[in-house]
Each structure stands twice: as C-alpha cells, then as structure tokens.
Length: 215
Length: 336
Image 1: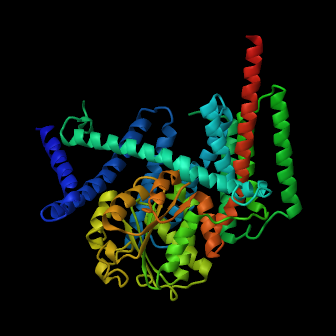
Image 2: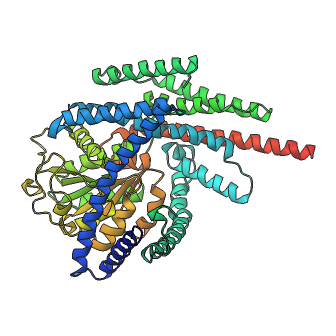
Image 3: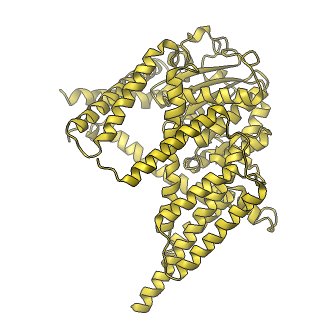
C-alpha cells in the first residue's frame, strides 16, 4: 500500500489536471481548485521540511567534523539568527527599519548578489580557456557570441557607427536573437514539451516510479 | 579547516572593506564621486594597451594566467562605475513595446507585477522593477504586486521605496492600498497562477502586511485576471515568465510584458514573436533601454558602462585564448 496509494493520488491528480484544461466546468473546475490548493499546502510543508533537512545535514556535518564543517556552523548560526530576529519583530517583522529588514538589506541581498556576480569571473575565465574556434560550428557560435555581446552594449554601436543605419552591431545582434536564436529555442522548446508529455504520461500511468524514491 | 595566512588577510581586508562600504552607504560618503574625464580615458587606454601587450606575449608563447583574467574582469566591472563617459542607448522594438502598452492604459488602470526572483538576480532585475513601477506611478496606474518566489515581495517593497524616492513622492502622493498594494508570496508555483485565474482572494487571503484582502480598497473588486489591464513579470527562472505565459496568457488571455535576466531572455523570444509576451526587457540592457524610453534615468543606464567594458574584456580574452590555441596547433603540426 505504501506504493499503491501515492501512485493512485498521482494518477487521479494528473488526469484531473489534464481533463479540466479541456473541460473547465463542474466538477472538474472544482477539483482543479481543490488540487491546486493542496499543491500549495504540500509545497508550503516542503519548505519547512527542507529547512529541517538542511539543519539536520549541517548538524551531522559538524558532529562528524566532515570537510568544510565550518560552513555548516555558519549555516546554523545564520538560520537561527534570522529566525529569532524575525519572530522577535512580531507581525511587522518585514517593515522598514526592523532587524529582519536590516539583515535582508545588508547581509542577504549583498551576499546573494556577490555569489551571482562571481559568475562574471568564471564566465570570463572559462571563455578564455574553452571558447575555441576548433571547427566550423564552433567558429559560427563564437562569431554569434561576439556580435551579440557587442550588440547588446552601447559600445558595440559606437565601434560600428561608420556603418550605414541597419547594419550596426545592435542591428546584427537583434537579427541573431530574432531569427536563428528564436528558431533554435523553438526547436528546443518543442523537444522539451514532447519529452514532458511522454514523461507525464509515464508518471500518470504508473510506469515511471522514480518520484516515489527507492527504485 | 586550515586557512593560509594569505586567505586570512584577504578575508580581513574584505571584512574591513565591507564595513567601510556600509558606513559609506548610510553616511553618503561616496555620493557624487566620479573620476575626471582625463583619468577615465587614461584608465581605458592603459587597459586596452595592456590587453594588446598580453596578445603579443601570447603570440610569443607566454600564456596569460587565470588570475590575470580575474583581475581584468574586476577592473572592467568596478572602475567604470566611477567614470562618466558618454554612451548612446538605442531603444529596441521589444522594449518599446512594453512602454507602448503602458502608454495605452488609462489612468487608474490596474497593472499586476509579479516579482519572481531573489536578491541574486536583483542587480539585473531590480533596476527594471524600479523603472517600471516609477513609470506606472508617473502615469497614475495602480499597481498590484506579488511574488511566486519567497523573496519576491521583499524585492517589490524595495522597488516601490526606490521608485517613490526617485519620483519625489511621499506616502500621501501614492497611498498604500489605494495606488499600490503588495499581496506577498504564495507557495504553489504555476498552480497559484491557475487559481488566480478564478479567484485572487483564494490565493491571497491577506496582503504582505497582514491586511485582509477584502479590506484593501485597490483589490476588493479584483476577482481574477479579467480585472487586470496589463501584467508585467520580472523573472529569473522557475516559476517565472514561461509559467505565466502557459497559464495566465494562454488560458485566461492576460496581456503581459516581461523583464528577464540576460541568461533567461533568449528562452522568452519565441513567446515575443508569437505575441504571447507583448514586450521584453532582457537583462541590464533591457532595463537601460526602458529607462531611456521613459526618460527616467536610473541604475540600469549607470550600469551599462561596466557591462560594456566587461563584454570587451571577455571578447579580448577570447581572442587571446584563440591566438594561443592556433599557435599551439601550429606548433604541434610542425612537430608532427
């Protein structure tokens, strides 16, 4: 029963969502609302579970003194710090000037932005080491990247201002984005959609069971 | 977890630098400081010449180390923030389309803005959000904000705060609950959008501050998407623009524009071409173009100079890398 009940819930929910898309009338519209509400509830619970799981894994790392356990200490201290300060702020904890607001603005925002900004360094380094014109396809990709990178910043047009209107770097970048890029994206999207449909069918029919864990 | 002395020194320098930056921010130490034009031109020229020198060294067989690449990227993104060099930003059609949509709305129209990103993407998306909210306020449009990401509503609050300051509005000029409202975060990804198609209130019982939905003047008559005149989605991943298109646009006919990170923007282009997304602000450049077309210059225009230099530096290093590659290839062919 531990496997059959989740499979049954998956199949019923899947079929309801498919049917209500084509027949948005009673009882399917009510069932759709009901399942959507349940999805929100389950996801909200998953956030709590995820937090607890993070705490548990970090605690184990510290207890066993695994490599990088110092970072686990930072996780746990930050977790409790922001939770306690949040609760201490009461219902208005998100208002401007509260401790939670200060932590969000002056620690979370700059730290997250910094992590993302580090990508610029790795992208530059990776481009330098790996972006090579090894063959015709790679050269084409390289040239497209050149034109888009230059065309997406004002300096691109500045460098090609001697060209006639319509042939400047921004025009070339726009053309690449509008036509070859969009065509490629469409092909990828269609492929993903077909894959999703087949995977969803397998899940609804109970053929694909990896989401239940174990197998 | 042993640390080298060098790492400790770097961490200490970073900590002191962060504290100074924070103190500088709250005390306004660095406001208005800019390099003189001659210094900016000298820095740019020296950087360019040193890149040429590295190219020559590469041709001679001396490869550039990785830390040099990092150093140049650091210079390219940091120093231009203090430079005042002229730059002409050309507004593309897909950005102008968002502006045209706002232009066509009557004062008092309801605009739904979904903040589906977190602070990691804020450097790219926050300037867009601020410019969009400022333009809505300028046109007397009412703004309903929400988030499918937990940090979205916090970013929305920051964007409104910044837009109000930029436009010189006070709490009396734009009243919370009447001119704008922040409905907060709701878990459930695309299912939230789906439920909003039949009832906003079913997903948002209260707003971000805990006020019951039915007590908020701006939304008490808003039942579902049919009461929304235009929607704008700021997104950096899942759930985001794709989910809004698939559910709100395709199913409920919502008119929507989008603002995406530069990485995500290419995936939205097919929806723009099919008019499912009416206009798109892609990356920092999209934000700068939007600020240009609205005539409300903000952070995005200021960030375009560092972006220009960073792109040039990356292109420069790709060229140097390829020169090294062909040189090595020639050498091995000669040996072979």
